[in-house]
Length: 611
Image (cartoon, rainbow, N blue to C red; front, side, top):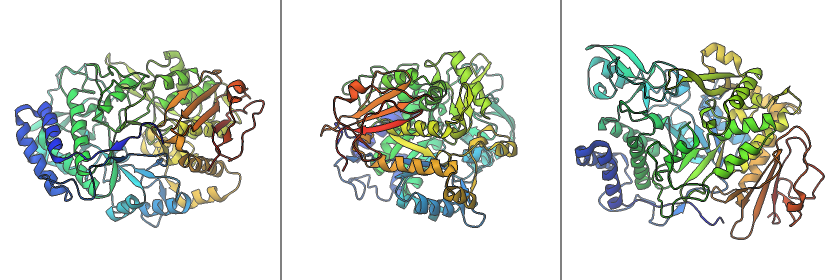
């Protein structure tokens, strides 16, 4: 096994109280004692297995247990990404997983499945209900019985159709004080914006017109976490999700949670304290539950959500490629997304230059136990552009966006501090993004696409594949036209009959991609060098190749991942490879060095015979 194995340790009642009080003091000052009492009462009522006065939660012991292994690989999907016109979409999804992917994935990220009013689920109306158009809690729990279920805690904002917002408009409790009123002439120029829509939304109330904070859209009204009632509401929602079988909690848009006029209102210290408190709660009531933060921002800001030492600007102090500061104890997220990976990989495979991606990989810190990366190439959102800051010059980013336009994609914009619009994300399916290079479309789309996935799957961390990557889905331009939203380009709803036909028909790109990816996933989950904690080292080689090593493990086992990122054959670093014998992880055969690696070819080579 790897030298450092991340493990979960239950948090006993005394230590939980101490930590909770410390976090609440930072948030609410002299009210901390009162809020802590209410929190403990809430835990006692809504977490039946918790006994605040003495024991660990039922079924757990003080011994630490592994958080993850090489068998961890997750699927990202909407509840209705597959429909058949008859059964509940959650039943259709469950049947598809059972019939096509029975042992492929360990976990499923079921994107928001609650009643919603916009943004395909991320404008939540009822947090404790399942959208009846998808199914019910029984079907959600059934998924949780077979997979590690990831559930979104959409806590930055709520739908205007929620009961809390209805209360606010009427001046009634509890929603009356759940939102952030702001005078329209308030100077908010320091606020970092992820969108170009107005930050304040004018709404009519029984008390007259008011202006409310709305970071993402006029239908997604931000909640006021300076009011401890809001925090306790979401603790209750979190406990409910755990009771329904959730094992991974994704904190949506968490970076923008706390607002303070005169600041950027992103990554504020209070936001980090809220994440720390939620981490302490799950460590206490459900050890082994994972917290994942969704922060699509430049990389050093993203890393701060592990809870290591932070600079005032949100960067990290004392954390570099050599590892964490000795004695550092991460106490926030278990996992953060590798947001720079998709755009850097897109640049690499369309330019044929792996040097920038290699430099970024070399810069990644050797994380302390209990911290890990979630690797992906595509998700329900677009391909973020902000994580490229500091890695690609402006003209390279512009060239990438222009190329994605040529391949049928779009670019979403945000408003910068100076009031100017700048790119926020590229909207395109990953398969169409792999259509060609800067010279235009070419015949290498499928090999290029598969190279991108094999590279991602080999990296240190836990991989997650969006359903539309698995099926090689094309741009859904009709979906964009119907919805008026650019993100709909990558949110197609497959008719199950149509997808089954494509998967069962020889020679279709859908079948070729699906079968190739499931073979890769099968090989990956049986390889101990792909444990999320196994070391990673990037080799020095030609810019046309990306080569990295996983391991070595305690038994000496190592894996070498080799990728040709160009559309021409490339020679391999044979001198280095010839120093020992290798086996091809995908075929199980001894590997015989050839003259070159074909366009977009990739290899997984291990220095031990396969079991």
